[in-house]
Image (tube, rainbow, N blue to C red; front, side, top):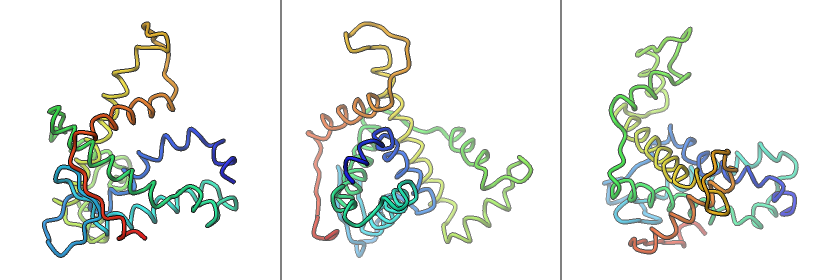
Amino acid sequence: MLQAMRKHARYFYFLFVLVIISFIFWGVGTHDDKSVMIIAEVNGYKVTADEYWRAYENTRETYRQALKEQFSEELEKGLNLKEMVLNSLIDQKAMLVLADEMGVSIEDRELQQAITTDPRFLRDGVFRKDIYFRTLELNRIKPEHFENSLRQQLLLMKLSRLIEASVGNVNESGQGDNRAIDSNIKAMAVKSFLEQAKQRMKIKIDRKLIT
């Protein structure tokens, strides 16, 4: 089974983004409520238990739909999916720390464009404010929480593209190359950059909360 998964190598590149996007309606962000259980923390950015388990269920369902009958509990254990999701969330928080350090941000116009072009809020190709607010209300999400969460997700994707671009003009021999870089190489570049940055970050993890 694990060998079968390796055939889906490019799929792993999209996992990071999939997990990000899947949170748009889950109110991702730091929580000030001291009663909230914290699974991990990266320089002040928290991964809550609620955030983690929603991410886990979303990721598990994504794999299940993609692999259909090939997906099983045995395969899930072999992939160490729980740890994979935790590491992905920690990476997201580390990316937010990097964004702070690098001065990367999302302007209001970028946030507005993302909202007004979201198909969920359109009718006949036109943004409808009433649909926007009704959709959030049905999902029990306050507009300010949704917009803060969306701004975070846009920031993560923007920073990922910036890191990818830093290797986009260099081929394996170190010379300029305008050809498209394979998505797996881009993923490796982002991961390598992030792992180096994480070495100087203060990371706390409480793994007993995901066992």
